[in-house]
Image (cartoon, rainbow, N blue to C red; front, side):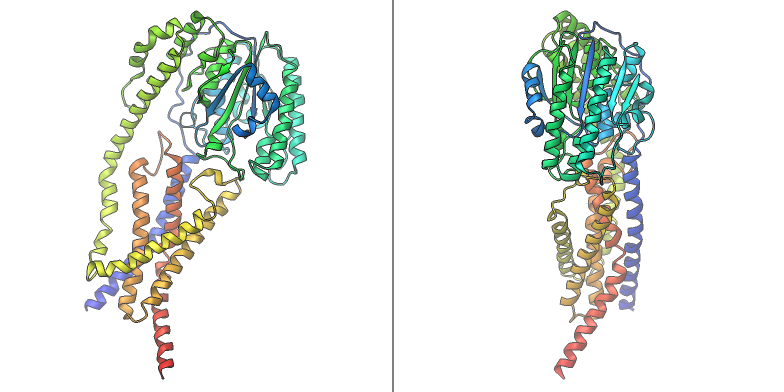
Length: 571
């Protein structure tokens, strides 16, 4: 009867493991969709700040798609502009994809605020942006380049001079070079037609060639140099007495060509500013969100109301009085946004208190006052956000502990507990060694930058499930082979316990992420590196749990087969 009871327990555990694979699939889909379909709760309407005195007539903003910082430092025309004007490095937000980064550039709102988290975003961007503000102020807001800008910002633009884009994966380098050449001609036409306001020029061929051939490939570098010459052509149409030129990138690339993740070559991009209203110098690194408020300050426009960035006042050539007005207006915009942010999250307002400590210095236009205020405000916002996170973690803690502790009940049923667990646990660790060799040994990281094309995503995830299945099968079959002398019940116990320990160790990692960030994200985005790992852990659970249904009887068959062969050999 005791053996029957244990056999029944093993069957129950196997069925639970099989069912866990289905639930892991549901959780993986929920987590993925919660990021890709993230709905921002911060799209509230806010009052605009006042206009200020313009420092320039026209801002020309060039976005070289996918331009790595190191590649930009080998561009002769751009290096000449660096020496004439302001030279900075910007930090990009995550996910570091094109549509999300474009939105940051023109709104100053990070992905968590804008709700633009992928290149699959549909519809008009809802956060307030510099195009919208320029149009409302009666100034032109023009784009020359990718049709994607029309998709995202069409209602706010005076004109979109869009290029024809080739098929990304199949077009030869010549097609992308031709597209950037067409962009140049449209840009020159836009500059001739609009001598005030904001003209954004987007070169996309560099990004496509990095995707197709790699971020250090000859094809990519050649196109970067071509775009550099185009920048020289554009500079020839500008008048530094009336125009300001800003050159930046939406993101960089890893050597293999992807982006979207956290790698330094992806997150660090150039910012070069030259012309009217710009003070020459090399400045400390800042954030991509600072571009939009800086453009607003240059054109004398109200600041984008959802902006989390700060105008680069230290870069601007203006009197302390002018900087004082612009800085105080920017501070009021940030206070208004963060008060609404805090009210949305129910965490208590904090921005006004920070402003009072810095108001006097801001109003006087002191050097570094804006940067000091923004740093203090950002620290206060981070603490407030952390309080909300930890409050939710405290609420989730009982559930997380239950998820972690309840499965231990099975392990406590093992006879000779540690002797019963030691060998299956050792082979469970072998599973993780095998799986991680297959993952990291191929040069993979927990990063969206693994994908050069969106079409690769599904195939990659399926392949990782195959890796998990192969790894767990290999470890289980080795365990079965060394267990051939054991009785069928003891062999079954070993293999079931092995499958359970693999599943449990994956569950603990998934449970830890759940405690940190939940399984759905309705007010904040999780750390996307940990989020990618969480997704990988769930993908491993999809095959490893259900495979216990096959591996246990297969292990019994292997033991029987080995005993049979040895019996025949003995006779």
